[in-house]
Length: 439
Ligand SMILES: Cc1ncc(COP(=O)(O)O)c(C=O)c1O
Image (cartoon, rainbow, N blue to C red; front, side, top):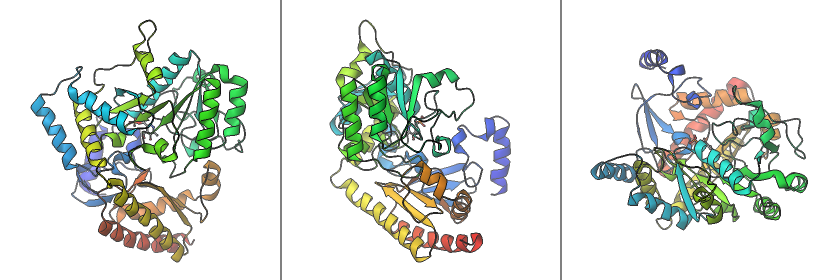
């Protein structure tokens, strides 16, 4: 890292906590933040103008490419309208109409500002709608930065003493989360419907909702199955439990219908953010009319509102993003490029006899270092993968101008040529890591 970076980081730390505005902004491989001077398409440029091919894409928010011209143009038009806060505009409902059109479970929409707010509101809505208190969370699933989410929220905070067939212990991942929160939740292992079935049989009358990701991209890439999600749907129906699917990260990666459309299962509520607007702040909760309308209950409403909710820039960006994604065949070429990349990268690892497994679904993928076998759950991550190898491998990628952070995305703008070039570099990195780490 250069003098410009070092002096800016030092300067930033004199005013910003840690020199950053989000604790997730410290790169896990370099242990430093990345400050940008510019981002464009599949590229990011640091403060010294060094160019990186970006596989992070704004935490998966910029799936259509950084600074996407159509999205930038839509936001410029907002200036012509004249921007304001705390009022809706016809663009507000226009985006909601598109969400209702394309997202299978969406009958009504309410906007919030971030994914964390969306998961928080969905929990409150389920509680208000059912009159019950308890929420079922999946051990290891990430849902943002509020008190009901900051526990058991990543592979590193999973209850590994649980072999996967019973309730997990609550494990806090942040100081300051009240222990009282523990009593409001049940945490269960993923992809085992029997555990949920048993819990619902015994405690269904207390359970307002179950919240899960349909595909876990926060821990690499681990999928679910139609059978499992259908079983959850059935149990929810039997016990009057609200089924919430968090599509903040999984949305618009496997197609316009998001993860639940991909698996063909209808939740009651889903949460959208990130790629909905290609990186412009806006998130949404969408779902069955009957539940969503609890927000407008004349007697006992679930309160859902905020100064910036449904902000015009976000709505304009969302419409522009969906206008792009709804073009016929748009996902086909993009997702084929992504899936070829995963296959070719795995071939490189195999040819180089390097212990690494690539898992990808849609445009987002994980690389598990230290194993040649599929990673199916968090026990596999803990037992089979090698964090030291992971760190060295991705550090080398970054040094060579390929940017990796926590989750990896191939944007619609990553061309065949760019991906071929990336594969050549990843082969070099593989050889160097193998020599250095003697694996
Ligand atoms: C699955 C999931 N849910 C919720 C969130 C929280 O979204 P936000 O960072 O917009 O608050 C994230 C963010 O990474 C996420 O990946």
